[in-house]
Length: 366
Image (cartoon, rainbow, N blue to C red):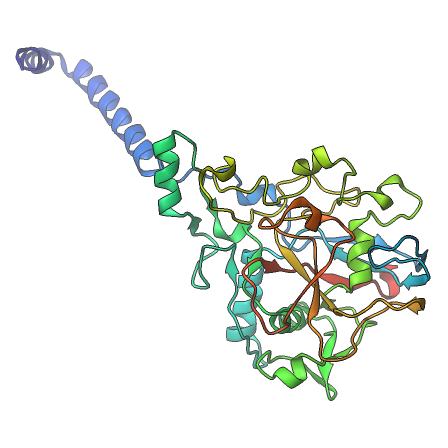
């Protein structure tokens, strides 16, 4: 107390110039201290600027390509010949900020009436009411991190893949994006553009106009061809994962159950989540998260892969679930292989299920 009184006395006896300097010194310290305090729980480790465009499309092949199948795993099996027309595929899984933008346009601004089953959500633990600019945080995990002396980095919700949308929602959203950009939609029913995912009979059995220039889901063959690198003569064609054939290097290319703890600390937290798009290494085509992170809807139904010759095959027979590819952060690495597949009910908004766009290359784009 005596020291403090002496300090105040010295300040009182200072000349005005010195007092002004001290005032600005304290003001600067207060501002810096305030900034540190109010941003102490807002460490952004992955800013928007690091994604050049959420809807970037990659040209997989600019001319028709035929693949003669080999082996007994994956879509390119022995006894199958598959020809694919020129197409593009999304560089990233559809991010929540991208979904949110198109969803809001479709519901609130489009001259047509769009109806979705689900609003979608970022990742697993946030909600459909999240804003893309909200910080993605689980308070209980933050407390655990602080108690263990581990860093807890928050990320904007918009950077996570959108999840919790049904297959029907995904194709309706693709139509909305096409119309928003003045392109020809791909999914129709009885000659009309599909815009309502609650009309299950229609949305589960669409007419697919593959030659239109709008956005759509990839077929399984398109998805796997892109995940393998798009060149049957290149070494990565037979890689186990999208980008590597080295199981020990899988962590560099895929989020799986072994490396997806929220604190990157193994089983310490027992909280596993999917991750922001584009954090792992891409495959040779520059595609991110083709192995792991979240499962991705494909258009095809889950049926036995028949032998024969096919051009732009779509497995759409029967009332069967739809194919999902890539594995997820909740699954072991084996599920993240490019040849692996699974299935999900098309009206089920899966919490680890997202998608990426595909687009037929038409006309002058070839």
